[in-house]
Length: 113
Image (tube, rainbow, N blue to C red; front, side, top):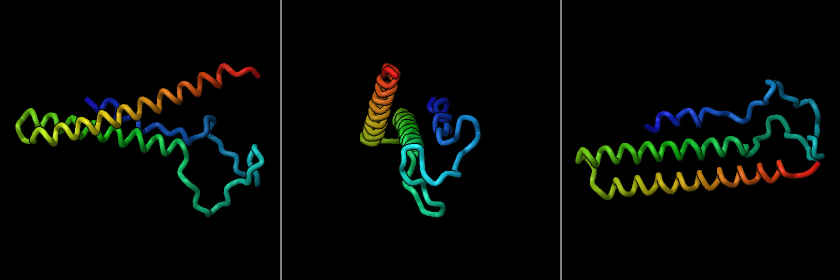
């Protein structure tokens, strides 16, 4: 059941839309210095969101497996409840982040130029 959502983690927002990258300038558009080659940088926003989506999917898979084990009698009630509650919390967090992103997008779309 969760495997249908598995491809969500495969989306990569870090790729440029036209397939090109411009790294020739020494400063970015906003006047900030560009990243120095060879110097490690922090994670990008897209990779953080991708990692969170992958963690949520894994929690849901674990909860689904624990539920099936509970139905078969191979897991106790405590393990099933813990896994399901963890998955529910992860899903609620993902939904809250999605709502904030949609709200921010709509606010930007309403701005006058």
